[in-house]
Structures are given as C-alpha cells and as structure tokens.
Image (cartoon, rainbow, N blue to C red; front, side, top):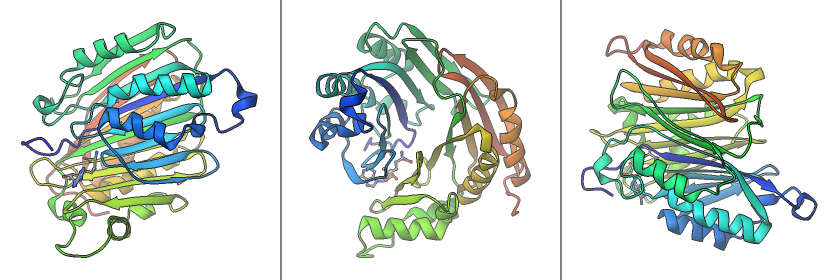
Length: 347
Ligand SMILES: C[S@+](CC[C@H](N)C(=O)[O-])C[C@H]1O[C@@H](n2cnc3c(N)ncnc32)[C@H](O)[C@@H]1O
C-alpha cells in the first residue's frame, strides 16, 4: 500500500481475441488457459487470486486487487492499488497466441482519476505514459486507435480511455457496460465494510455477511455471488448471472473512501440500469459519483437521461455529461453527480 492511503480507483482492460481454430478450441477458448498461465499474468500485474468460480459462459476471479473475467474470446481485468495492470498485456498476448493460436483484435483501457497519482508506478505514472506504453505494446494490426480524457466539472473525476481495434465492425450492438466510481462514501455506510476485531471469520464468511447486511445481494437476486472481506476492512465481490458479470470493490477508509460497481446488461432491458443505479446509490450514498456507459452509438443518445432520471430522485444532481465515440467500441457517455444537499432523500 502507498504511504498516503489505498488507491481505490481501478484500471480496467478489456481485450478481445480472434480464434483461428474455433473447432479445436470448441467453446472454451481462453478459458482453456492453464491456471499457472493466469498466475503468471497476474504476477506481472502484482496481484493474486483470492477466489474463483465459473459457469457455462465464463470464469470469474476475485483478486487481491479487484477482479478478472475470462470468456471464450474476451478477457476483462480490473485492478486497483499500485498494481501495474498494463504489464498483463504482453503475457496475455503470449499465452493466447502460443497456447491457443488466438490473435488480439481489440483493446479498451479505462480508468478514473487516481486519488494518489504520485504513488502509481510506471506505466501508470500519467495517462501519456499509459498511452505510449499501450501503443508500444499492442500489435500493429490494431490500427484504429484513439485516446481521450472525458472531463467533468470535478477535477477528481475524469474518465481516461484508450481504444485500439483491428477493424471498424461493432461486435456487441445490444450490450452496454456500466462503470460507476464513487468517492466520499457516507461514513456510517462505509462502516459496514469494516470487520469486527477478532471476529475469527474467514474472508469468505465475513464477505457474505457484508453482502447481506448492505443489500448488495439485492442488486441482482439471480446472480451467484463470490464475495470476500479483507482485514481489517475492504470488500470485493463478483456476481455471475448467465453470461453477465457484475463486480463491486470497496475501500471504506475515511479520507480516501471509494467504491466501484460495474456490470454488463442488455440495451433491450434498460429498466435494469435504473434498478441497479438506485440500489448502488442507496448502499454507498457517495459525495461524488461518476457513471460511464459504453454501448453502440444509437442507444447512447438517450442513456444519459435514463441515468439522471434514476438517481436524481435520490437527491443527486447531474453536474456534467459528456460523450465521445471510439472506433468499433461505440460511444461512451460519462456523467458525474453529487448530492443537491448533504442529506440524501430516504426513498
Ligand atoms: C482489494 S479491496 C477493494 C479494491 C477496490 N478496487 C477498491 O479499492 O475499492 C481494497 C480495500 O481492502 C483493504 N485491504 C486490506 N487488506 C488488503 C490486501 N491484502 N490487499 C488489498 N487490499 C486490502 C484496503 O485497505 C482497501 O480498503
């Protein structure tokens, strides 16, 4: 941990691969990578697996610093603290290529603004360094590239995005990814993510207790939840529901409290966005919250209204809203919110 405090803001990488031998790899694809290979990739990042669970669609790992999801042709890896996430790219490409004959076809890197930027090691020392590292690391077939910082009125919340793809075809037209970052959590609610001293519980059973006490289990009642409570505080969970993941990570320490929520969903069922946003706000009551939604261009025209309409009745006000387009990835709408008054509405 940095001397200043734990860096909650995660770095997130989503990598898509092209499978040259779909008949040999069957439907498992990247899920066939051996656990030793995954451990080597995580060693480069400097984190470890805390627990793992899978279903017939994908494998989900809770990490010492956040989460990893492995689908047949897609990997999502999200890490916080002072981890070196971008160092996973070279071993990932190596294992996917040499063990499975997969080729990297797209990269999407996103992150918020670090609370302790000076504590970050290379290549996370600045967004410029991250972009240079990415450009020097990814193969040349990923020729459609874009780097952008989506600003907000609050200097502590801006959204850093780098994308690179090998073609302009949009693969997931009916899917959205929602990434929520929250700071200045309500101190009483943040207290739910501290363990009682000498509780003698395992990280798993203490995590399960936090999941139920806070209502995290009600965000998606269909999801299988893999949760973990750190000692003396901190919480991580992955939810798996058919082909969809969700994930929450909490750094509850006062002064640099932070929580994140991320999920994927279908644009055809966007009522879910409203339900999820409202639950998340009620669990953390943040002082500042950012919401980033990535999806196909057409849908994003009115998603910002849906997001604002979900959280404004709870006492939050939209302070900024920007949109940017990325080749093949789609549009990203980035909004920030803070309470109208210090006190939240109770409904
Ligand atoms: C790994 S968790 C959740 C990560 C998530 N990205 C976040 O910060 O919100 C981080 C929280 O757990 C605490 N923690 C306790 N032991 C830890 C450990 N061994 N590794 C990482 N975090 C630990 C940190 O102080 C922090 O409050």
